[in-house]
Each structure stands twice: as structure tokens, then as C-alpha cells.
Length: 239
Image 1: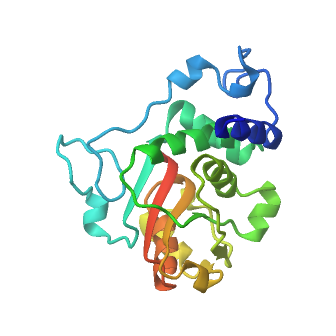
Image 2: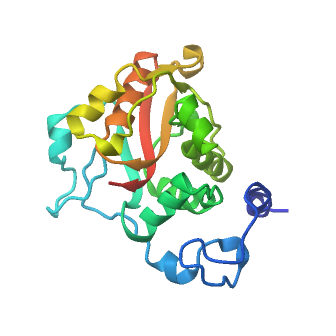
């Protein structure tokens, strides 16, 4: 039995397939796909030119450029990349995944992220680090979406998961805050778990959406301060 077959069996057990598209509710030719071909065709990957640091789409047709945000703010992570823009079908998928309890969408989003990861000239990673939720918010939601994405990526890539961060302070929703307040909101929100395990390791932070980079930046700061060799960031979408 091939590795891909075993992966599909595992994912089907983890997230049992439904016969209708999770977005348009049209009937699926293959129930295991979750998303119909019409909806899938409307999801487009981000293409160059992108900011060489955070992956934001740029208007200027030149490579190795920094966006204005990255010119103004230093991030300790080496590079961040996302599959696509936070809009249209991709935005709908993430919303259903996070706020309507549709955990099976992790399979779709995780596959898109793995497609991105395969194309990047990044180093070998020691661990996938899912961004944590505060325990109160995780109880309310019932799951951590970043961890579910990391589980799909771990199966596809063979990179082990390590929950090396914990969220120790409840914070306001970042979507309600401007850039400056987002940074302030996150101060002291995260701590590392088992610093020895991440010492001198190359880590890949996993989350659903990269917007201003405040959350990814704060988490990468904490990991680097704890001794990580390098931190990269991979998300489904770029806001």
C-alpha cells in the first residue's frame, strides 16, 4: 500500500467525507474531495512579485523587494509565505473552518499549504509549530485550527509536530485592532514549552491567516529568544 493511500485512509478516518461541496452545497462527484471543482478552480495561489520577507503581493514587477510594512518593522522569522489571498472561496473556507465547526476543511487547506511548501526553497524543518489558542478560546471553539492544519501537513510532509508554544494571556480578537494595537495586544501572550527541545532547531510556524504579521512576529520572537536556530511561517491565506 502506497504512502498516499495510507494518508488518504487516515484523513478520511479523521474527517469523514460528506457528499456535498462545503461551499456551494452542490453534489460532489467524489465525496472525498469535500470541495467541488468549480469552487476549487476559483482559488488561486499567490504569484510573484511578492515581498521577499512576508510574502505580501507587490505591484512592482521586481523580485527581492520588501513591502512597506517589512521596511518599517523587523521580523525575527526568516520568511513567511501563504497559499493565496484572503478573499473569495479561500476566505469562505477559512471562515467555515474557524467559526462554524467544519473541521474537515482542514484537509482542503492543509493540502493547499503543502502545495506551497513543496515549491519553496526552504531548509529541512525539525518541527511544525502550530500557533496556540488560549485555553478559554479553545474550549469555546472546541479545537485549535492551526493544530488541525499542522496535523494534515505533518502527514503530507513527514515533519513532526511540536506544540512548543502556549498562550498564557487571553487577548482581544486581532481583527478588531489596528497594527499598533495588535502588537500591544500580544505582548506577554505567549510562552515556550520545553526550550531544550527547540534549541538550535529550524521551525515552521503554522497558522490560518497572515495579516500584519503581529502574531507570527511575536511567536517567532519568543522562539528565537528560547534558542531556535531559525523560524519560518506558513499560512493558508495572506490578508
